[in-house]
Image 1 (cartoon, rainbow, N blue to C red):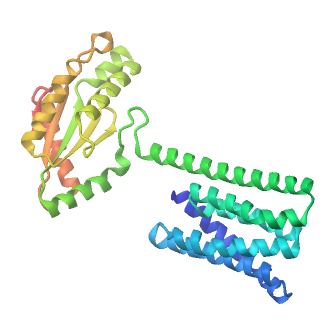
Image 2 (image 1 turned 60 degrees about the horizontal axis):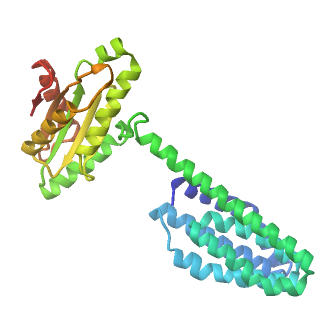
Image 3 (image 1 turned 90 degrees about the horizontal axis):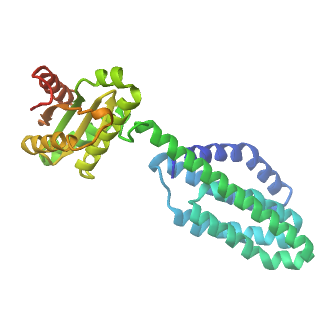
Length: 319
């Protein structure tokens, strides 16, 4: 479940505790036990889910969906039987809450069950014309709530992707670099499987921009990014660090195989037909991860070798 939904659940729980629970207590005092119980059970569901999400980033849907929700259905049914329209009114906030606290599929099932379970009670309480209006209203509320949650989730995922990916190439950016390399180094320290950093820079890139414009420069960057993604495995990580700089993290790859990878990238680059007859080349610095080194130290070694490659005439590999 996305973090944004957890935040909504948390705020919904706080609002429910402040605004609705006192109303439930008042109903208990006034003898309206069913309404008080309904409010209490929904409160338990919200608090359980919010607390579980806070601790473990997830929750046991069996408890929420298989234990607490049947109690809610029973109480709603009894409310409709005993209170008529008042029971129907409590269906609306219940449907809204269900759409926020449950995964989409479970929320849809819960909404269908709510309508289905209440049908016998509703049909015996109201005229068909009123029943149709009630069902139309409940279905519209359920559909809009589901749509609203979907839009929020999709927008959150898009924003999350934009935050960690370079908009031009779709490669990872610096934001996740430290965490990802640190995890990879920790894995290397545990397993001692080889891992190599490949630092890449496009030679004379400023001249390309100055002579042919930024569109041509962007096209070169996009083609090289595509080439790197094609040459890498799914377990490898490819970053655009900014401008004409790239970084590839090759897992389970020693220095010799990283050199072969780098050579193949340089060779494949010559086969691409760029606009304006451009023939860009790459300077590459390699650094095999050594036990107990920090990610900064490993990255610095790769960068130092990259600078050596550029100082040695460019279009070379040092490492």
